[in-house]
Length: 222
Image (cartoon, rainbow, N blue to C red; front, top):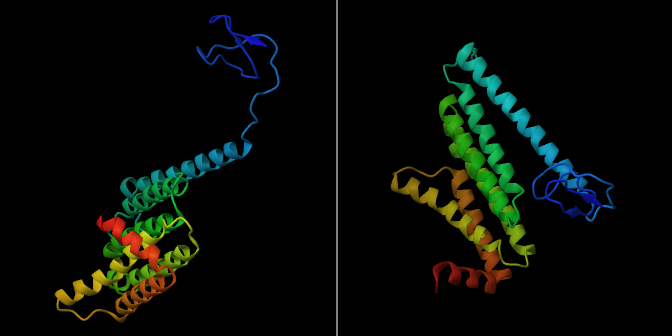
């Protein structure tokens, strides 16, 4: 058994340092009390490696853009390094959310899609394809998110997915209402997105009516 020359205590297992003062232990070690978490260590290393690579890209893009004035594309006056930094920082935030304990699949899907759509909209504004993003990419992505959350709600036994499915219904309806109040005809993609949300809501009521009613009462404090 190892001992700490400063704390005067005996320490079992195969620890290299004293758990109290972090001094190096002396003596012969014993069999480890707990197994080594090699899988967790490997995941931790891979996460640190990708984080290091992300910061390499961020620093390189900032240097090329702001110090060397290298433009991508050459005719653009947009500081692309700021957009790259925005995307990669949001990517790291999403990575942390993905591996956080207690985060359900529906929440992960919803958060990831919404973060990507916000970043894509900002990027589209500066690079001139905002209309394509707002009229086509965003509604198609939201419709796909609705379908994914509907499938997850059907196979989820804990009832934690239903709230995201109901939120998706509002996400599909609100843009059409905004177009109507703005005196503009809603693009067909947004109308299809709204109809998708309504159809999936009806399907949720048919297949899981009690769960839907319970979720509505819980959220509205009824």
